[in-house]
Length: 495
Image (cartoon, rainbow, N blue to C red; front, side, top):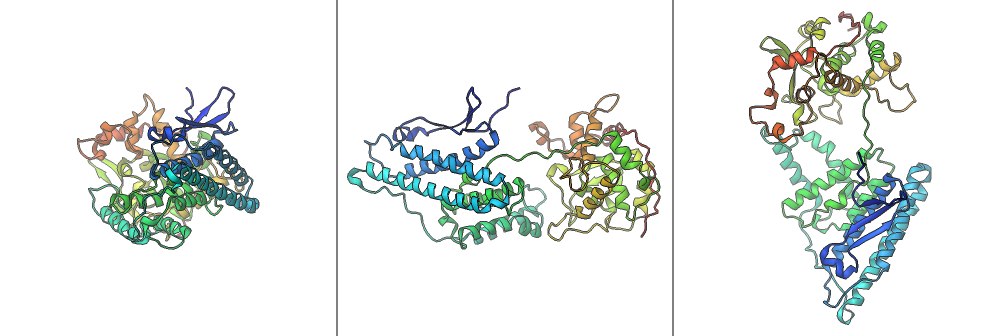
């Protein structure tokens, strides 16, 4: 199976990557060529993709300027220097990427390179303006239509956007809204605020220029203050969403969608499943055999994760009333209808039959003896992340698995064997269940994944939670077995 390169990249027979971009049909006569094709002097897809994104943004800015200019019929081409200047832009961008890879101690070098890149861009734009002017009849200066001034500020648009999304979130039959205002202010506003601070003051949103968006994009991509690629992408997406909203409300004409796009790719942090030896180390330890746990969550969360495949926060926020019966089958309802409960996606809402091993270990007796409210009330909600209860649970499990020798030890970096590995292990066990695997559609339903097919996502036979009989799902869950000697819960934790 061949690997498909990212957009705008082409590899020659020697392995060198090239940038290629088709010139819009209406501009080909002006530019003098139908395609821009330049070597990036590298075989690294990661590095080439970053440079290609920068070039693509810069070229489309040029195309927009060309369209905005009032050109004569007699014009044919622009001077080659405008294209060749991009080579200097490539070199400057490469230097920045290399400096970034070498660490924070070279921050001064990176800052200098960023200044140089800004100078190159400015020089390139000046040359373009001179070239256009030289082509105009009588040397007249080409000017773009003036933008209207005034209008709603970025912060005022944010308030409108926030109000609409919160209102949508309160309607149970509408997708896409925000269910609580606190989450909106914590997970969305800080990124919009960073954009405002970067461009200098809360100006009218219609007065934001493409250069300011490009500057914000460059800042997000290289600043060491943002620790991960995922965080960089999120910051760009949050700002982009506000401009998309503004465009739908006819407050702006251009939402700069192409300029807000995240540059590069995010390395997938896939979690490894637990091996049988891992499971024995985790559940046949002295702590489990003698129930040496000072809180019930330390015993129950790993066992529940293994036999339900549920995400950690889905388990941490369980209420006593979430444990019930559907017909003759004991079930766990993973929902977010109550206040301060949050699920990852719409598809995460589901009802999971309780595995007989959980019943054998005393889970129903534990639930019966628990007071009303959350099953694990000692796990506190994160004040900065409404609906998140996983901080202490994650810390507890990480410490425990290191103690029994599973996954990376402290100081060895982020482990690919973590609590989420229970989810991978459960899914893998269903995939290899005997006498036959659990079908993918039912695996998807049991673990709360999104369906890919239109037939399933548009299921019209009722709520997706009712797609399969609960008896069928119970039989599927029971086919998950592990060769591990589990010890029943002894209710001997220290209160």
